[in-house]
Image 1 (cartoon, rainbow, N blue to C red):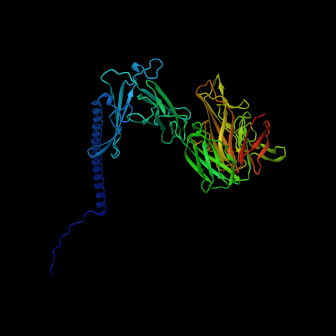
Image 2 (image 1 turned 60 degrees about the vertical axis):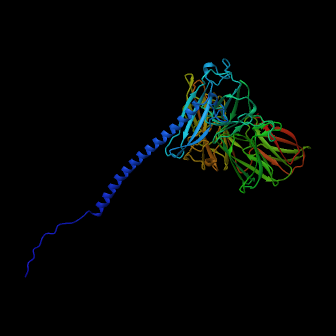
Image 3 (image 1 turned 45 degrees about the vertical axis):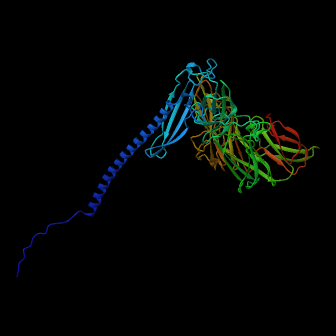
Length: 605
């Protein structure tokens, strides 16, 4: 039998699958890091190349201007007038750049200034400021470059036969607005003038050494999210006698003109019947009170609309103003609005208006009852109508319009509002001891800086639509402020969590005297509410004082402070208004149209 020599077999095992995957992952991470580093290096190099091209383009523009005659350093159709273009699109290294050039005359204070009462400069164009902005919108991570330079004449300035145009822009409260767009045109000049500027931090645009022209400078002021104001041409068919005509610039004279713009608002109008059911497709006209022309009167806002099928009309970009509503339906009469008209819309707010309609029943008389001091609708007023011979026609009660508190001297600890002189809680800075008002505590001859008071829980007893929170301050200097917040709930329990909010529906905002519209998102359908008042002063010699506070609302589609009588005949009528705590009022009227309103302003006893 044969014998075989056996040898040990060597192991030939390779990498396992896990080892291979792990190695590939390590390699991928390293490769990606190298690639990203390279990409960043390339991107940085490209950005430097683009920036260098932009700098060269800016330098070219300054060199062109410096080599022009001084009288030619200006913009085509601009002031100062010249040969340079406002906008240019230039290409470098296959990249497109937008070049924006601005040139302005500068009035140096060294030799006096235009409009000065002590050293009026009749030749205010001392030298020119040139600004060049280079933008590459298609270039990634490229920030616009802005350069400026002064350009002076070779010789002394010459006496000017031009004038100057200064434009001021401010908001509804008189605060200057920066970065507002100002467009100026003069199509009667040779060459024509077209200037686009933005206001500085003081809300001003100053055009120095402007060619004289009588009522030919057309000015429009605007800003994104704001209203617009402009001048108008004299003699135009739609507005022959404008209250702000195109501006005049006279020889060696300074013309100043001011414009007021502010943030726009939203108007949400709903047409309903007295059962709160929507009425759709109702034609109406909305008219503001701001006037842009006289003889005849021309209103800035005077537009026709029609509500949609669900009775809604939502308008944005509404300017702050008071608005009236004129309904022209052949089927329905307007019997009231919530809130009362005219409806004031403050800047940057959302206002809901409910227009209550009833079937036409000619002829109709609307009676509106207001408080003589506050202008608020008066609820539970008895309105008695008799004819010219004092024959009784009917009596109606005006809808409830507000809840109020005018005294806090009863102290704290009241959860539910029952005693009209008590409240829920307060901070140590509040003085409530004086009947009929709250203020800050005075200590050692000075007032504390701040304090707050939280009301008891008010029960409206219905599901209302809240409108506004209003108050009557007694001392309101620049150093003192009164702010408020509201909270709403479905139930009246001591464990209810009260989340106080302001006009933008957040806890970070506060109602002020200029913005008092209550947002509907948090308050709609809530039966109970509380308010919280915040008093502050920065000058401890003064304190804000709150005398009266009102929360207005509507419910069940009953117009606040309004009643209507339909089915009347044209002729003479007598109206008697009675309300506890008020002096009675009577008025004789002549009903001369199918729809007529009589307004009563009652005085408290």
